[in-house]
Each structure stands twice: as structure tokens, then as C-alpha cells.
Length: 224
Ligand SMILES: C[S@@+](CC[C@H](N)C(=O)[O-])C[C@H]1O[C@@H](n2cnc3c(N)ncnc32)[C@H](O)[C@@H]1O
Image 1 (cartoon, rainbow, N blue to C red):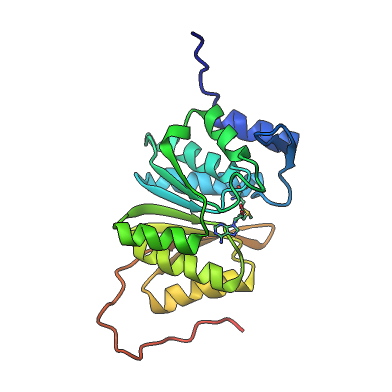
Image 2 (cartoon, helix red, strand yellow):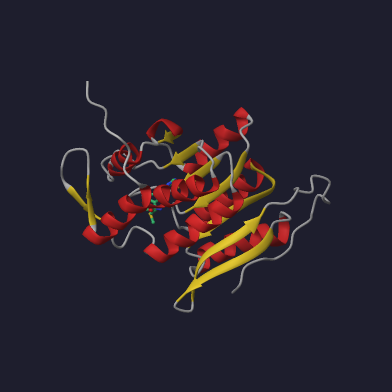
């Protein structure tokens, strides 16, 4: 019997970015641009995960799997094995299981639970189950209502003191969703990581949601 050893995650990430494409399960090729984060933004995500050293992580919007690889690279440098949940309704559909192939290559497939439902459904079920996460990465549907639902549900699912990293805060729909949480749900804005003068990743520290808020408590949040 032959055993295949896992490839190094930095090498997988480097080679995929260099090739600009990766294979789906059916052998067709998937171009990574414009879907996937820029390599430097992936590095920022990796470094953030390494700093947080989270035991339990969740990611909304996996697409190519390069963000997943960045998360596992960060976990490895923190010495954490990883217990990761991926939520993406098109994981095996449009994306053709390409991310699953990367996970196999990296030897982490058995540490990832893939939920192929919309995040609103998957996250609500996590809540119903009583799941708790230490770190979340949000890069799913970018419509305002989706971004808002994702960050609001994650404010309940990530433990107080845990971290939510939100991709693409240069988009008003995303930054407004984040603002709702900082103004109303006791989330702290810890950092906004920029590249070329444009905000790429917002880092939030989750706070205890005030369940004793007045019934009409509401802080206006939208930037425009
Ligand atoms: C910008 S891409 C994510 C890129 C990914 N992080 C990567 O490294 O390649 C947005 C992702 O959100 C997913 N998505 C779209 N609607 C969604 C929903 N309702 N719930 C969860 N994910 C969704 C898409 O399938 C896609 O994979």
C-alpha cells in the first residue's frame, strides 16, 4: 500500500497563485482570479490566525480553498491541529470540489467539516446546536443582507474575546454590516488591514452581547 504524504501548505499556496488556476474534481480548470484573496491578503489572514491560535474556526465562502489554506497555515505555525468548518453552498457545484482537493493535498481534509448550505441556514443550525467558535472568517455572499446576517450570527457563535475577520471592507455593504455590530452588538474594531491604500480585512473582537438592552435600543450604523 502506498501512502501519500501531505504537501507543505506554503508551497501549495505559492504554486496555485503562480499557476493562476486549479483543478476541479472533474478535471476542468478553475481560474482563481477574481474570486480569491490576493496573496498578501491571504498572508494577512494567515498571520492573524497564527496570532489568535484558535482551536475552533469557521469560514463563510471557501471558493478556491486558498483562504482555507491560509487559515491552516496560520494554525500550523501556532501549533494548533485545527477543527475547521467551511460554509459554502457552491463548494461542489460551481467550485467543483477544487478546495477539497487542496485540503487533501495539505493533509487536512479530515479536520474540515463542509456545510453546503447558505450561511443563513448553516449558521442558524450551528446556533441551535450550541456550537462555539474562537475565530471566524467571512468572505461569502457580499449583498448587504447576507453580510449583516453572517456577522450578526457570528457575533453569537464566536465566544466573547474571539475574533471575526471580515473580507472586503472596502465595499459599503460589508463595512455597513460591520458597523452595525460595532455600534449595536458590543463588537470592538481591532484593526483594518489595508493593501495599496484600500481596506482589505477588518478584524473584530467579539464582546458579550447585552441581552438586557432596552427593547428599543438601536444605534444608527450606516456610513452613508
Ligand atoms: C469571494 S468568494 C470566496 C473566496 C474564497 N475565500 C477563496 O479563498 O477563494 C465568495 C464565496 O461565497 C460563496 N457564497 C455565495 N453565497 C453564499 C451564501 N449564501 N452562504 C455562504 N457562502 C456563499 C461563494 O460560493 C463563494 O465561494
